Image (cartoon, rainbow, N blue to C red; front, top):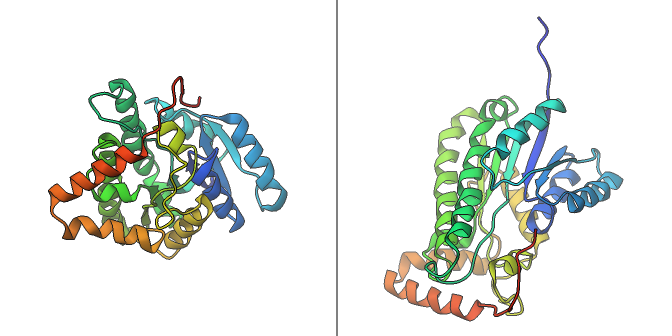
Length: 273
């Protein structure tokens, strides 16, 4: 009986805009066949069309809402139907919400956990056999927020702490199998994240800010070099170290003040669909 041969593909979630779109361009530029996964089909189709002009492969577009528990299985079904097998999984999809946890809609915060934690874990583990076979890997996007508690964005910071811890442990476990696992921890990046979170994007942080393109390139380079942890920018590296040297109470007060200054008062604002 003949064995089916599946083509290796790089799956990138949250690939419609921002860091996800930048990661898709970087991987495609280096010859990877990519599968774009996000909720917004129109943006992904435009991105796939753009990439197809200059890349070796036209990206595959898979529309899915990863907040749904059945989304990973649907993505797997779509890939199987196209004869594709993930060799690299890039978990970029995620969102944050700004404000006191007791005042933000509880359902929205639980949805954040579903996307930032549950979906990322599912997609990191779902195709391990294929990733091992192709000597591929996993690139998980966390944040410098993962190194500290975050009053004012408590649940978001906690989800990124999970991504950081999980990814580093998984890297250690899979290293003997020839699989690389990299966790990318950017600082502030000017994308739609700020609008959805309720953050005033007009308040720049010149020391910490990096563009989506800079973050994506740093993530790709670190992943290909087999690095376990990538923190783009000297300022963000410094921020990630501060909790090790400062009293916990002082860190909490400083972050609470920082988040209070980032709040955006926009009546009638709705998150993008």
